[in-house]
Each structure stands twice: as C-alpha cells, then as structure tokens.
Image (tube, rainbow, N blue to C red; front, side, top):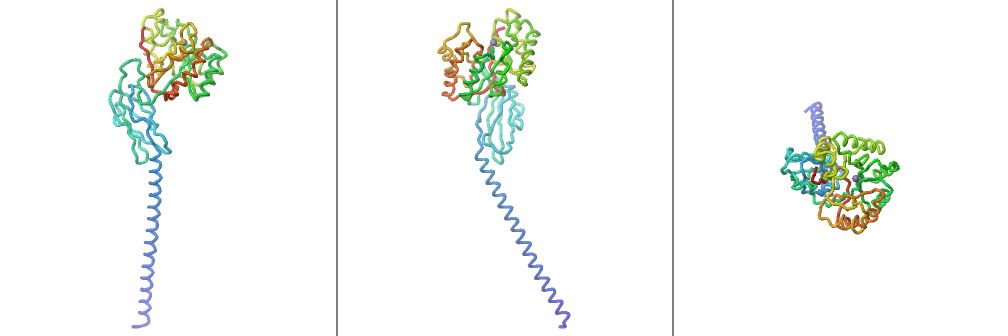
Amino acid sequence: MNLKSSKVKMTIVIVVIALIAGMFGVFAYQSNQKRKAEIAAKKEAEREKKLEAQASMPVTNLTIAPGREYTMKLDGTKAKVKWSTDDKNIASINDKGVLTSKAEGSTKVTAQYFKKKFVANVTVKQPKSVMATGVDDGIKEVFLTFDDGPSVNTAKILDILKQNGAVGTFFVTAQNPKSKDLMKRILKEGSAIGAHSYTHEYSIYKSEQTYFDDLNKIEDYIKSVTGKKTKLVRFPGGSSNTISRHYATGIMKTLAADLEKKGYKYYDWNVSSGDAAGKLQPVETLVRNATGTKQEKAVILMHDTQVKTTTVEALPQIIKWYKDNGYKFSTLENTAVQSHQPINN
Ligand SMILES: [Zn+2]
C-alpha cells in the first residue's frame, strides 16, 4: 500500500461519513417538518370541530308557499357556510342562505360548515286557505301593523315599542305634513314603513290608473322623506274591501294581481284589533280582539291616527300577551310571511 492510495481511501471514508451524516440530517429535518405539519393540521381540525360544535340550525322543518323568499340560518357561525338544495326545481338557495321556493314538492337544504352538514326538510306547498300566511317554520312571530299615520300617536307607539324591544310596520299616508320626522324615526328604530295611500280616498279604486297614480305619489313621498324605497303595500280598506265596488267592479282582483306582477307585496292581516270601528273602542275590547290567537304568524291590524287613543293605551297589554306566549316581534320587511284576505271585488 502506498501513501497515495491510503489518502484516497481516507478521503472516501470521510466523504461517505459526511454523506451518511447529511442524509440523517435531511431525514431528521424532513420528519421534523412533517411532525410540525401534523401538529398544525391537528390543531386546525380541533379548531374546526370546536366551531362546528358551536353552530346550530334553528329551522330544520319549513313549509312554505311557492314564490317566497325565506332566509335560512345557521346560528353561531364564524366562517363561510355553503348552502345547497337537493332539487333546484322545488327551491333554490343562494350563498347568503336566501331560499326561493318555486314549485310544490319537497327538498332538502344542506348547510355545510367545515366538514359538518346541517340538513333541513323543506316542503313547498300552496296554502289551503287564502288566509294562511304560507310559512310554517315552527317559530311564533307577530307583526304589529299600524295604518293611516303617522300622527302624534305614532310617537307614543314608538316609545312603547322601544321600551319593549319590539318593532312594527307602519303603512303611511301623506295626510299629516308634520309627520316627516316620525317617518324617519320609524326606520331609525328598526321598524318598517309601507305605502298605504297618498290621499286615502276610496275614489282611487276607480281604475288601475287612479290607483297607481296614488300609490306612486305615496311611494315618492316616502322616498323623498326617508331616502328609502318601499315595496310593501296595504290597500286602504284591505284587499277584501267592498267599498271599491262603488267605483269599479272587480278592481281589487285586478290591482292585487298588478301589484304582484310589478314586484310589490301587499299585506292584509289575520288578526284585527277592531280599532277601525267608527266609534272609539274600549281598551279591553282592543286587547281581547288582538290577543288569544292560535296563529303561529300573527299579522295584527291597528291604526295610529290621532283619534285612536285607545290603541296606544291597549298596545302594552297586547305586546305583553305576545311576549308571554313566546312570540318574536318582526316587521314585514324581508319576510316570507304574507297575509291575504279573500278578495270580494
Ligand atoms: Zn287606512
């Protein structure tokens, strides 16, 4: 063995040792990275599981009329929910959870939140009676509605609503020029405004032209005062009124169809306080009329004109009954609930 060859051997040994050490190093680094990634994935999975556990679906059975929009919800969520329906011909749903019912039948709505799926059964069905509101989601809901204002009583009504954490829907006229601030206050305090009539003269029922002239005027008035357009409408006298017969036969049927075609929603009521009567009604009568309902969705007719003082006095007791009976207070804005009376002309 010469010196040169032993040097070469030595070099080879060193190189081999270095290579092996290097390989171990890389291997150790790689397994460390892998472990780090595994820990991160486990942490993420735990976080997702925790978030999933905090979510819940309040409505898992919904019956709804065709052609309505209903917002499905997943409570307690902090990240994006992926919504879908099994049968888009029955009902479709957008990424905000707004369900549009289309044709009669049933479908499932799925809310996917991380890996967890929440499922609701949706039945689309035409209500048997025109009086039905077309929404059954197991949630008791009351819609307080006030016609013919605003007036000084509207301020008192808003005070009562505020004290009780309640809201209402006000179908306004333009008959009280001092009411502009009240209209702004209605919206500011979370209640809603709908169009009733500019004049509240029944002669608006002479023709489609006269009706829509009046409706457009009150709409423009609302927009000019509040800056907000409304598509909520209540007919003077309701859609079931017979006074319109004196002006035009069949006009209510025509107007009801016109409104829906033009994208408005008109609302009657399924509970009447009875305060429309010419003679001022006693508080007890109004409370008795407006409470005790078996309706899951109650749309109550009341009036907030200046003369209807007993309505203001009755309101706290009416609100109390609905609170005691587990009702939630909502406005007619953004609801699938629609209350229609049978049309008589
Ligand atoms: Zn009215």
